[in-house]
Length: 252
Image (tube, rainbow, N blue to C red; front, side, top):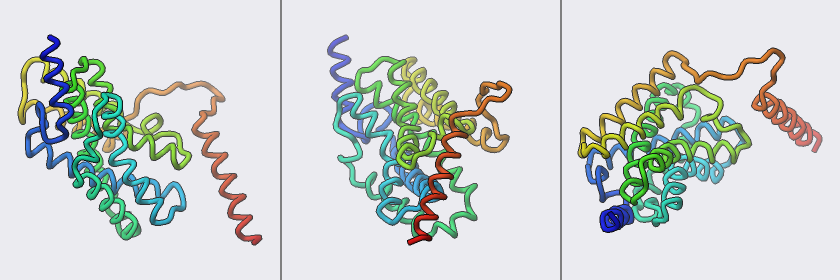
């Protein structure tokens, strides 16, 4: 058992192109596509939430695209794959730059961007879970890290722009990632590798995410009479603060 765990850790250290299901060129291609889509989507979301310059948009776009994977690799004690393959950095920065230059035009294609975002979410939950298993972690821990890979970057972005993380308040987002991660761990556990073990969990997560967007599905929330959520209070505080900033700028 120790030798098997050691071998899996070695595969985890080898980076995104090696080990388990991550050898598939299809998965690598989708992973890179998801990185670009997350960079694009993250930068657009950040630009809507706060008035940012070029540097701010690039930083938050790259944070969205790469943050979850970096958190995963730090937690499993391996060098972040992002820094071992320049394509990830380039695509994340490229997506954010496109969002900055074409932010007005891209507003017309929000549905397409949502689809790319869903593809990135579904692929990252699969690759994140697989890499955690390759590093020798148990199934439960690997599922958790798969979800972190998928939603961690967006959470960091929301915190950076003083927003309640959308994964905690909005429509189905963590649920598809959780389902995809569980299916990935189950597939590896029963010895189903390759395209089938990779694409089926990703496809299921993608369909759940798109159904959630299409039908506005939400996780049940608490319902109390007269209850005011912390998200609403936080939003009110931000609007008041921005109003004061606008007043100060006008006065100067």
